[in-house]
Amino acid sequence: MSAVKPVDNKPGEVTLFAFEKHEGIPTASGFCQKIECYLRFAGVEYAQQDTLPFKAPKKKLPYVDIDGIIIPDSQFIVRYIKEKGLADLDKSAGLTRLQVVEGVAYRGYWEEAIYPAIVRSRWFDKENEAVVAREVFGDLPFFIRIPLHWWFRRSLTNSLVAQGVGRHSDAEAEVILRKALESLEIRLTPTGTTTEWFHKTATPADIDAVISAMLINICGTNSNPFCKKIVLQSKVLCGYTKRAVEGFFPEFETLLKEIKEAEGKYGPVLEVL
Image (cartoon, rainbow, N blue to C red):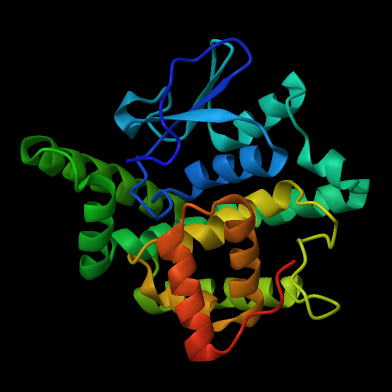
C-alpha cells in the first residue's frame, strides 16, 4: 500500500490521486512521482488516494484535489500550486529569469521526448511489459486486471505511435535514451566533490522535481533495465538520485538498498549533503 495514506480532504489540504505505491518502492508513474517530488521539496503536506487512469478527468494520472478544486495533469498542477500560493520552488531557489527558462526547456525535453521513450521500453518489450504490468496491476483481482491491462496497453501504445516514439526500433529508442542520460550526467556534474541541484542552488527548483522524479522512476522499477543500469553505474546520476531519496523519500528502502549495492559494485557516488 501507499506510504502516504488516503484521508478525507479538508480545507487547505492537498489530495494526490495517483497509482498505488508498494512498500519500499516508488510509484510506476514518473508524473505521479514528479508531483510527489514537488510537494515534498516544497514542504507541502498532502494525502494520497490510490486510483486508476480510467477514473481520472483526462483518463491519465496524476490529478489533485485542492480545496475541492480538481486539477489534472502535472504541468497544470504545479501551475495551480504556484497560483494558489502554496509553493514556488523556482522562487524559493532564487532563480534568475534565464534559469527559469532553461528549466522550462529541459522539462519539456524530458517530459515530451525522453519519458515517452522510457515508457516505450516498458510496454513494447514483452519481458519488460510483464514486469510493469505486475507492478501496476498486480494486486487487482484477475477479472479486473486482465481487461484493464489490455485497455491500458492499447491506449498507451496507440498514443506512443501517434507521438512518434512508438515508431522507432528498440535500437533507435536506446540511442535516444542513452544520449539523454549521458547529457544529463554532464549537466549535473558538480563543480566540486558533492552532488548539486540542477541550477547549483541551495534548494531544489522546479526542474529538480522533474529530474528527480524521472531518475527515481527509472531506478524504482525493474521494467526498464537498460536505463536503470546506466543510472546506477553513473556516480553523478546515482548520487543525484540518492540525494533526493535520502532527503525526501526515506520510505523507499528497497531503492536505497539498490543504490548502496550499486555503490559497492561500481564505486561510491559523489558525496551527498
